[in-house]
Length: 224
Length: 106
Image (cartoon, rainbow over all chains, first blue to last red):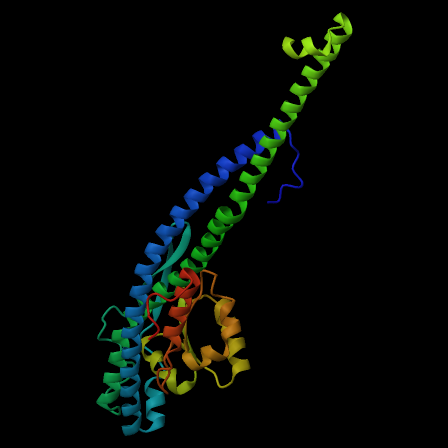
């Protein structure tokens, strides 16, 4: 009830009423935005969880294969084999606007179009375990990129939801009650002023009548 | 046109070079922080980082959480899955919803 510093004037009252309408409207809109964001966020976060499980399992498998490959190959040969990658991955990014959050979308292009043409080495000195390892990693790459996209989107949306939620709460629990209290204060003050003016007028009228006609106090009671 | 980087200890990430990602092996935290900053400013849209390194660079990574690019994504290293990546997802749920309703404390 921060009513201390309000001017109890009609102008202030109109201003506050306008402000309250705007705030109520804004509150409703922001609440809708929050709900819709939340719905999309929950869908996305479920997808994020599933993708992450998949990618983590995939990388685990690939790491196992690499360890296997390393155990049967000389370190130098392994290093040389992977030194000059044949494949290169480029990303194109777009943004998509979801409820005023710009979330990224990645589109990837690979240098070699044939997905089996990825091994950057001749097969003479390498073990087949290395082929498996590289293959398992290449298989998980699309999911990894998808994960990057979804996880980044989730982070951005979480930030936006947090912001929106705070705004909704601030409007609902601080701004709107505060303004309602101020409006009530002004209305009551104005009414009070009006009543006191009315009484003053009545009083003045009585005094003038008394002065003009010299009625006794008994009759002046009946006159009004 | 953006590129993809992988940051972490050498054993965990050397395989990614074969499939065309740029790998940046680092040995210590200060070097990693410097490298991360360079990558983030240097046209990389996605930076995969090993979970162990991610745990050490938490404050640096937090700088990029609310910016659109780059996406810094933790991946398990060769030493196994620490569950850090999943905890991050959980953290963003908690941030948005206020409490964790997806994972149910598992």
